[in-house]
Length: 141
Image (cartoon, rainbow, N blue to C red; front, side, top):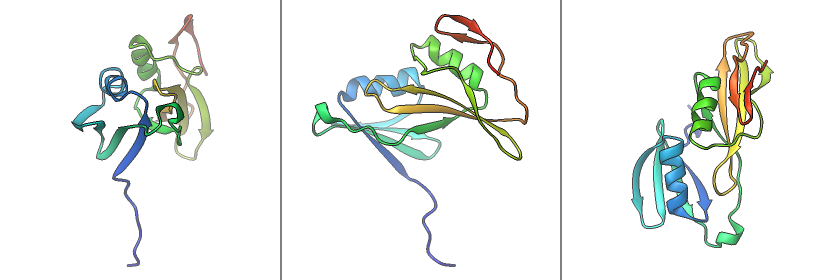
């Protein structure tokens, strides 16, 4: 069998304030903190480590590619995270109708401006139930 890479072991994000970022990822998103070593904080994302590290130049913390968190119920996840103070860029929306599921996403940012998203591989023809918006209840779909 030829050599091939197939598993990501760690993703790193540069942050301006490690303490603030650690609190967001641990207390708001609910990620399990593995350990902290100086200005490096590590979280477990189902076997993939997420490293938050202090930016060498905090005024130029680079924003990389979005990180997509899988969830089994996007409406519930959005409602829960909104209750914890997360502001979403919009309502959960259908991204693509696949052969065996519908792909729904909702986007938000962390305190450093990194784009994060919830990703729900929903059953075919899934209809978004009423979810709390920042201004009240809305119905998606």
